[in-house]
Image 1 (cartoon, rainbow, N blue to C red):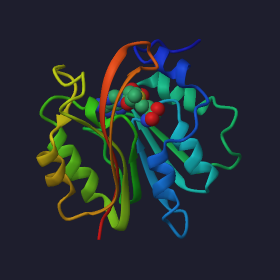
Image 2: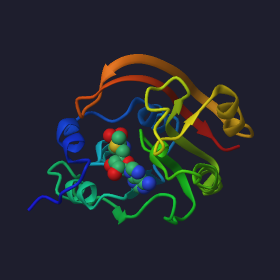
Image 3: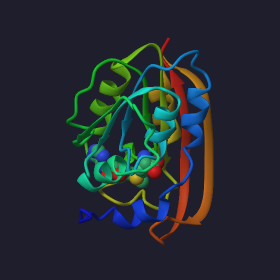
Image 4: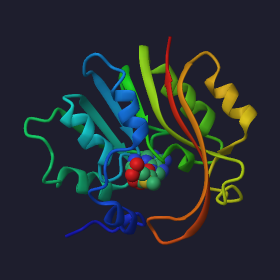
Length: 195
Ligand SMILES: C[S@@+](CC[C@H](N)C(=O)[O-])C[C@H]1O[C@@H](n2cnc3c(N)ncnc32)[C@H](O)[C@@H]1O
């Protein structure tokens, strides 16, 4: 029986979608596969791509339904080196990684936890390791929500300080979310590497 989750509509409506461009951009810059952590992995659109490219993956999501869907996917490559964890990324621990991927996920962290989460994440990157993912800007229509974290340009610059910025694309669009909600997006698409 499917696990109930407030994310079920999202998982259903994004099923089978291709990996995020930030992930592909980051992966194309590695000479060889390594160890990746996929934070807020959802039903696994990025985890599957990592496994296809022979990466070892720890996939973390706070929703049991996400991990259940990922493990039930028919396109899980045979012999995959995949470990999963149902946990909030604010609380989870993981070993040093070549890549921390967090697609459309970090801005859902609990109020007041973003800065320590960011430090933990960057701190677990091995030298030459990369972060790929998205943060939300201050014009995003979710900005007033208490359970969503947004960053203005100066705050983004502070987060990037000390890292190599390999990709920083800013997108502003009006769209409808996979859950059917009209929304203004203000997204920072990021790929960063640790010197
Ligand atoms: C918008 S979905 C993105 C899923 C996938 N990364 C993608 O790109 O389609 C956000 C995911 O983050 C997870 N999530 C939200 N807050 C979280 C938290 N604090 N810790 C771990 N996972 C969280 C949700 O359960 C959901 O699966």
